[in-house]
Image (cartoon, rainbow, N blue to C red; front, side, top):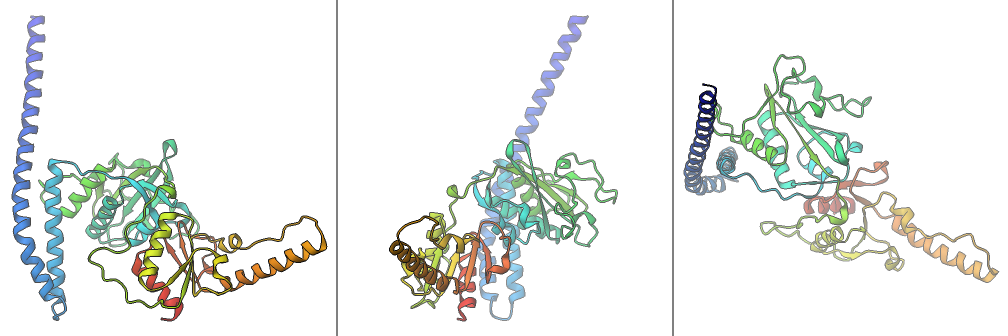
Length: 396
């Protein structure tokens, strides 16, 4: 009897495993069929919606154009969700400029707590930030903490859009860590959200939901692909990602102009921009941006030959000190000392003329004294933003 019971149990276990495998296969077939259907729908509807948006734009029908663009985005998210139910998104982590990414998406954070770069898939993270903020209607907040093995924990969260999330205020000047929920709690899903009695639960990455919200489902897919879990409590959302710090020597800025961009109208003829950027790839990026507007580029104070630049673009808040030259303290003949003094005076005059030009700080991290610069932008600032700042500083 004992042997028979064990055999029966084995049969039951095998039957259960077979049923589970069968259910998984059925779910995959359904997901594949849904993908084929939505791919056809996406193909058939995108062209007419794009035509509506193009024809309505500029004819006093911008509201119609905006609605068509929103429908295009909704349709694209729906198709992406169906695609990711069949195959997970492919990750392409690379050194990512964090400050520029956070500012581009309106994320609130303590600037001094965030490093300059981290290994992330910037394209996927940008999609998540856009969808999460759009779904909740509230700005995202980022808390940064140290994780194991030298990793960074990037904890994003948002309120419910009604100001009813007391743990989302990171503007408290008396607390650098903003007093928000701990990133260590993410994934537990049992704690109360700000005392409201609403528990955090995972956002399921599936289109089989009562409320069809493809943007939120897409964000859940992408967060899961990046090793996190998107959670929801009421209208509030949160997720945490871990990433390794990165070095700028490995970073590659994007192309400053795409095929769809119109090149700027030149306004820098006869004007020199002094670019003090030690990173080769970023120096090439800035060269392409300012060269497109007709500026002459210079990369060393000594190459100015006493002619002051119209604009200085520097990556280092201490560029003045790095550009200056000292006289030294050694002893020598009177003639040598006099020659050194004359050389130092000439260098000082060149540096002074360079220092009087308006300065744009194109920085990896925020400077300790932002007021020392006319404009502070974070790498890699978009070409349009750099050129707009140059126009403003030059009075163009």
